[in-house]
Amino acid sequence: MSFSHFNRRLHLYLALSLMPWFLMYGLSSIPFSHPKWMDAWFNDGAPMWTTRFDRSYDLAVPANADLKPIGARIVKDSGLEGAFGTYRNNEREVNVYMYSFWKSTRLTYFPRDKRLLAEDMRFRWDRFLTGMHARGGFEQPGTLHKAWAVTVDLVCVGFLVWIASGLIMWWQLRSARGWGWLALGGGTLLFAAFLWGL
Image (cartoon, rainbow, N blue to C red; front, side):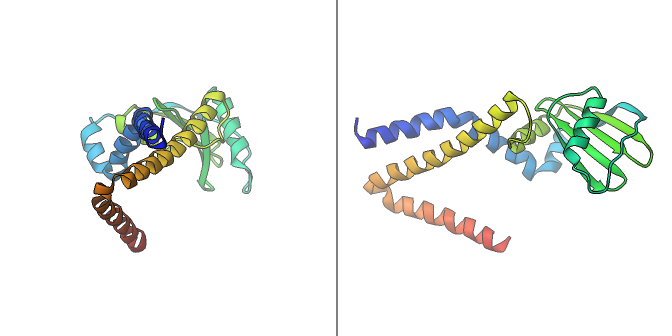
Protein backbone atom coordinates (compact mmCIF):
# COMPACT_ATOMS: atom_id res chain seq x y z
CA MET A 1 0.00 0.00 0.00
CA SER A 2 1.45 3.37 -1.02
CA PHE A 3 1.51 6.37 1.32
CA SER A 4 -1.05 8.13 -0.87
CA HIS A 5 -3.40 5.15 -0.63
CA PHE A 6 -2.88 4.93 3.15
CA ASN A 7 -3.51 8.67 3.56
CA ARG A 8 -6.77 8.52 1.60
CA ARG A 9 -7.97 5.58 3.68
CA LEU A 10 -6.92 7.35 6.89
CA HIS A 11 -8.85 10.47 5.88
CA LEU A 12 -11.93 8.42 4.98
CA TYR A 13 -12.07 6.31 8.13
CA LEU A 14 -11.23 9.21 10.41
CA ALA A 15 -14.15 11.15 8.91
CA LEU A 16 -16.50 8.22 9.54
CA SER A 17 -15.33 7.57 13.10
CA LEU A 18 -15.32 11.27 14.02
CA MET A 19 -18.71 11.96 12.40
CA PRO A 20 -20.72 11.81 15.69
CA TRP A 21 -18.33 14.33 17.22
CA PHE A 22 -18.46 16.64 14.20
CA LEU A 23 -22.26 16.51 14.37
CA MET A 24 -22.33 17.13 18.11
CA TYR A 25 -19.96 20.10 18.02
CA GLY A 26 -21.64 21.50 14.91
CA LEU A 27 -25.22 21.19 16.16
CA SER A 28 -24.36 22.39 19.67
CA SER A 29 -22.88 25.59 18.26
CA ILE A 30 -26.35 26.66 17.11
CA PRO A 31 -27.79 27.07 20.66
CA PHE A 32 -24.65 28.96 21.69
CA SER A 33 -25.06 31.39 18.79
CA HIS A 34 -28.86 31.69 18.89
CA PRO A 35 -30.12 31.38 22.49
CA LYS A 36 -33.23 33.45 21.73
CA TRP A 37 -34.23 31.02 18.99
CA MET A 38 -33.80 28.14 21.41
CA ASP A 39 -35.96 29.85 24.03
CA ALA A 40 -38.65 30.45 21.41
CA TRP A 41 -38.59 26.85 20.22
CA PHE A 42 -38.28 25.03 23.54
CA ASN A 43 -40.00 27.36 26.00
CA ASP A 44 -43.45 25.89 26.60
CA GLY A 45 -44.16 28.11 29.60
CA ALA A 46 -43.06 25.53 32.16
CA PRO A 47 -40.55 26.77 34.75
CA MET A 48 -36.94 25.96 33.98
CA TRP A 49 -36.16 25.10 37.62
CA THR A 50 -38.29 23.24 40.17
CA THR A 51 -37.53 23.14 43.89
CA ARG A 52 -36.40 19.79 45.26
CA PHE A 53 -36.00 21.06 48.83
CA ASP A 54 -35.45 24.27 50.78
CA ARG A 55 -34.24 23.60 54.30
CA SER A 56 -32.08 24.76 57.16
CA TYR A 57 -28.41 23.98 56.81
CA ASP A 58 -25.30 25.17 58.65
CA LEU A 59 -21.79 24.96 57.24
CA ALA A 60 -18.89 27.30 57.94
CA VAL A 61 -17.51 28.87 54.74
CA PRO A 62 -14.40 31.00 55.37
CA ALA A 63 -13.82 33.89 53.00
CA ASN A 64 -10.74 32.35 51.38
CA ALA A 65 -11.85 28.73 51.60
CA ASP A 66 -11.12 26.12 48.94
CA LEU A 67 -14.56 25.68 47.40
CA LYS A 68 -14.06 22.12 46.09
CA PRO A 69 -14.28 20.34 49.50
CA ILE A 70 -17.10 22.66 50.57
CA GLY A 71 -19.05 21.74 47.45
CA ALA A 72 -18.36 18.06 48.07
CA ARG A 73 -19.68 18.37 51.63
CA ILE A 74 -22.85 20.14 50.45
CA VAL A 75 -23.44 17.47 47.80
CA LYS A 76 -22.93 14.66 50.31
CA ASP A 77 -25.17 16.27 52.94
CA SER A 78 -27.85 16.67 50.28
CA GLY A 79 -27.82 12.94 49.59
CA LEU A 80 -26.65 13.45 46.01
CA GLU A 81 -23.71 12.17 44.01
CA GLY A 82 -22.15 12.96 40.67
CA ALA A 83 -19.98 15.53 38.90
CA PHE A 84 -20.19 19.06 40.26
CA GLY A 85 -18.62 22.49 40.20
CA THR A 86 -18.60 24.99 43.06
CA TYR A 87 -18.73 28.76 42.60
CA ARG A 88 -19.05 31.81 44.79
CA ASN A 89 -20.04 35.01 43.03
CA ASN A 90 -20.53 36.94 46.28
CA GLU A 91 -20.40 36.51 50.05
CA ARG A 92 -24.13 35.84 50.34
CA GLU A 93 -24.20 32.47 48.61
CA VAL A 94 -22.26 29.41 47.50
CA ASN A 95 -23.44 27.73 44.30
CA VAL A 96 -22.92 24.06 43.55
CA TYR A 97 -23.91 22.99 40.06
CA MET A 98 -24.36 19.27 39.36
CA TYR A 99 -24.57 18.38 35.69
CA SER A 100 -25.10 15.29 33.60
CA PHE A 101 -26.19 15.18 29.97
CA TRP A 102 -29.77 14.33 30.96
CA LYS A 103 -30.36 16.29 34.17
CA SER A 104 -28.94 19.12 36.25
CA THR A 105 -29.30 20.13 39.88
CA ARG A 106 -28.40 23.47 41.40
CA LEU A 107 -27.60 23.72 45.11
CA THR A 108 -27.50 27.22 46.56
CA TYR A 109 -26.24 27.66 50.10
CA PHE A 110 -26.94 30.94 51.91
CA PRO A 111 -24.46 31.08 54.85
CA ARG A 112 -26.02 34.13 56.51
CA ASP A 113 -29.48 32.57 56.49
CA LYS A 114 -28.17 29.03 57.18
CA ARG A 115 -30.34 27.79 54.34
CA LEU A 116 -29.81 25.32 51.51
CA LEU A 117 -31.92 25.39 48.35
CA ALA A 118 -31.88 22.51 45.83
CA GLU A 119 -33.43 22.95 42.38
CA ASP A 120 -33.70 20.59 39.40
CA MET A 121 -33.60 21.86 35.83
CA ARG A 122 -36.03 20.33 33.36
CA PHE A 123 -34.61 18.63 30.28
CA ARG A 124 -34.20 20.69 27.12
CA TRP A 125 -32.44 19.58 23.95
CA ASP A 126 -30.52 22.84 23.56
CA ARG A 127 -29.10 22.52 27.10
CA PHE A 128 -28.29 18.88 26.38
CA LEU A 129 -26.24 19.86 23.30
CA THR A 130 -24.42 22.81 24.87
CA GLY A 131 -23.65 20.69 27.92
CA MET A 132 -22.00 18.06 25.73
CA HIS A 133 -20.07 20.75 23.86
CA ALA A 134 -18.67 22.30 27.03
CA ARG A 135 -18.02 19.06 28.92
CA GLY A 136 -14.35 18.27 29.42
CA GLY A 137 -11.46 18.20 31.84
CA PHE A 138 -10.06 15.64 34.26
CA GLU A 139 -11.10 17.27 37.54
CA GLN A 140 -14.14 15.05 38.15
CA PRO A 141 -13.70 11.67 39.86
CA GLY A 142 -14.93 8.46 38.32
CA THR A 143 -13.90 6.22 35.46
CA LEU A 144 -16.60 7.37 33.06
CA HIS A 145 -15.73 11.06 33.55
CA LYS A 146 -12.05 10.32 32.92
CA ALA A 147 -12.92 8.21 29.88
CA TRP A 148 -14.94 11.10 28.40
CA ALA A 149 -12.02 13.50 28.97
CA VAL A 150 -9.53 11.10 27.36
CA THR A 151 -11.89 10.52 24.42
CA VAL A 152 -12.28 14.27 23.88
CA ASP A 153 -8.47 14.57 23.78
CA LEU A 154 -8.28 11.74 21.23
CA VAL A 155 -11.03 13.36 19.15
CA CYS A 156 -9.09 16.65 19.10
CA VAL A 157 -5.98 14.78 17.90
CA GLY A 158 -8.17 13.03 15.33
CA PHE A 159 -9.41 16.39 14.04
CA LEU A 160 -5.80 17.56 13.53
CA VAL A 161 -4.78 14.34 11.76
CA TRP A 162 -7.90 14.55 9.57
CA ILE A 163 -6.98 18.12 8.59
CA ALA A 164 -3.37 17.12 7.85
CA SER A 165 -4.44 14.16 5.71
CA GLY A 166 -6.82 16.44 3.80
CA LEU A 167 -4.04 18.93 3.13
CA ILE A 168 -1.82 16.12 1.83
CA MET A 169 -4.60 14.88 -0.47
CA TRP A 170 -5.16 18.40 -1.78
CA TRP A 171 -1.45 18.94 -2.48
CA GLN A 172 -1.20 15.66 -4.37
CA LEU A 173 -3.99 16.78 -6.74
CA ARG A 174 -2.13 19.27 -8.94
CA SER A 175 -5.28 20.27 -10.80
CA ALA A 176 -6.92 21.34 -7.53
CA ARG A 177 -4.05 23.37 -6.09
CA GLY A 178 -5.29 26.71 -7.43
CA TRP A 179 -8.78 26.39 -5.99
CA GLY A 180 -7.26 24.93 -2.84
CA TRP A 181 -5.07 27.99 -2.34
CA LEU A 182 -8.12 30.19 -2.86
CA ALA A 183 -10.12 28.25 -0.26
CA LEU A 184 -7.25 28.08 2.22
CA GLY A 185 -6.34 31.74 1.77
CA GLY A 186 -9.93 32.96 1.96
CA GLY A 187 -10.67 30.98 5.10
CA THR A 188 -7.44 32.10 6.75
CA LEU A 189 -7.99 35.77 5.90
CA LEU A 190 -11.56 35.69 7.20
CA PHE A 191 -10.43 34.06 10.45
CA ALA A 192 -7.57 36.57 10.81
CA ALA A 193 -9.96 39.50 10.23
CA PHE A 194 -12.23 38.30 13.05
CA LEU A 195 -9.25 37.59 15.28
CA TRP A 196 -7.91 41.10 14.74
CA GLY A 197 -11.25 42.89 14.95
CA LEU A 198 -12.83 41.12 17.88
